[in-house]
Structure formats: structure tokens, C-alpha cells
Amino acid sequence: MRIAFFYFLWLVFLLGAQNLSAQEIALLRYGGGGDWYANPTSLPNLVKFCNQNIGTAIEEKIETVTPGSIDLFDYPFVHMTGHGNVYFSLEEAENLRNYLVSGGFLHIDDNYGLDEYIRKEIVKVFPDKELKELPSNHPIFNYFNKFPSGLPKIHEHDGLPPQAFGIYVDNRLVLLYTYETDLGDGWENPEVHNDPPEVRLKALQMGANMMKYVFEN
Image 1 (cartoon, rainbow, N blue to C red):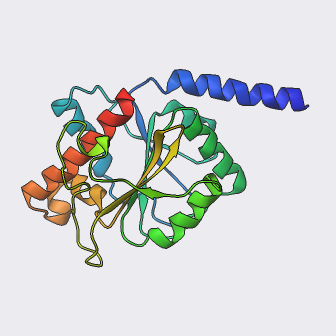
Image 2 (image 1 turned 30 degrees about the vertical axis):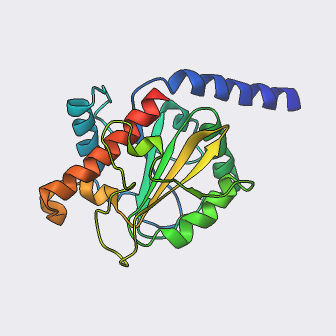
């Protein structure tokens, strides 16, 4: 039984490593009651912007995946957002960890109200690691579009500066948590939040940097 289990894990890793070469992204549908479906126009707009401006060929149809599904391994970039509660079972946390270790990338964007919940769930995924703030000279801020001051501020929440936190595996950034910025709101259709064009452009450019960074590293 143990041999069969380890064979299954090896197969998942192998399939994941092969599938993660595709330029596809997905939205994470998590449990706990939070609105994982917030910002419905954000990812389609970001994909269109990237394909038009930075030479990507990302599939425009955005799929949803759950933390515990093997389908997670089909996507090199997974996005997560919301305002409320998040819950990962231990099995889901393990699957997320295997996905990230085998080459995947998770972007978590606090849509205001997510922070107190997601930090506890990240500990389940990586109990032996801590979120570390990315310095302003991190490559993700300069990969295509230049952000010399680091993460841009898109929406005001508590008047705090925007922060980007990450978790690394073997010096590879596998999880990016953007806080006090609300990039996803900036990616939405212009009429949703009535952001000035220059603010919305900064959000899309930062998202494009993230895509470029993931697909080329």
C-alpha cells in the first residue's frame, strides 16, 4: 500500500511538471464561506492585457480549481482573492504544498478582509516557513514594467502602505501575497470601481509583471 501511495505522488509530480509548462491560469475556489468569486472581470481583463502587451499567449477562458483537486497541477498560475473566511483542510493544504513545490505559483490578493483568515491557512500549507516581505528591488517589480518603489497602491483600505509577501522554496518564489493594494479591483472593468486610467494601468502592469515572472522562471 505504501509503495502504491508513493507511486501516486510521483505520478502527480510528473504530470504536474509536464502540465505546468502551459500558459493557463485558474481561480482558486476555496471553502470557509468567503467570496472566492469576487472581481469576476479581473482575470479575463488581465489575460487580455498580458496577451496584448507582453507577448504571452494565455488561454482566455478562466477555469476554477479547488485546493484539493489534482486539476490544480494543470495551471502554472493560480489566483486567489476574497473578503472573508478561508479554510483549507489538511488534505487540501498538503495538495497545495505539493503543487507549489512541483512548480506551481499561487497569487493571493487581499480584497479587504481576507488577511486575518488567510495567514492561518498559509501556515497549514507551509508550517515550517514564514511570509517574508519582498524588497522593492525584487525582480517581480522590475521584470517588464518598472516599479522602483515596489508594489503599487490601487485602493485605500486602512491607509496602510501596500505590501507584498512571499514564500520561497529552494530560492524560488512560489507564493505571493499582496496586501493593502487590491490589485484585482484595478484589473476589473473600468466602470466597476471608477478607478482613474493611470491607477488601473498600474494594476494591470503589476499583474503583467507577475505573469511574465511566473512563465519565464
